[in-house]
Image 1 (cartoon, helix red, strand yellow):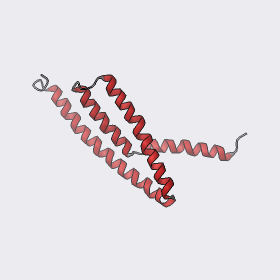
Image 2 (cartoon, helix red, strand yellow; image 1 turned 90 degrees about the vertical axis):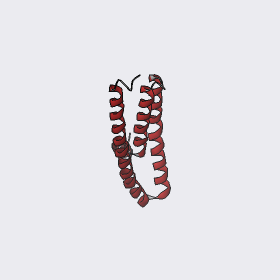
Image 3 (cartoon, helix red, strand yellow; image 1 turned 180 degrees about the vertical axis):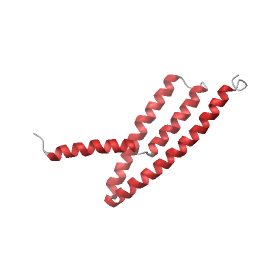
Image 4 (cartoon, helix red, strand yellow; image 1 turned 120 degrees about the vertical axis):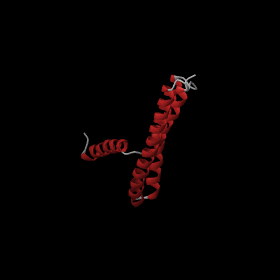
Length: 123
């Protein structure tokens, strides 16, 4: 009923989806940053738990597809050689952005925990 070409396309699509989730992207950096902002607002009582989760789901399900849509459009319109350069640049830029955001979030979390443990701050 099906031929090798159809199966090959399915395998490539599944493999691409897997690799796409392994590689960091600028969307990941945006998601991590928004999680930190939402957590701070939640801890400070500015938003409810429901609002926090709604916002995090929104950013998770919107930013990654938007990024990959933009990446697809760029690759589609700029050709094969640009595709290879774009993929390498994306991995490098995305990885660097994630490292920077995570490092910054670690510092903010450490400060937040220190402030929460300090009874003078919680009044």
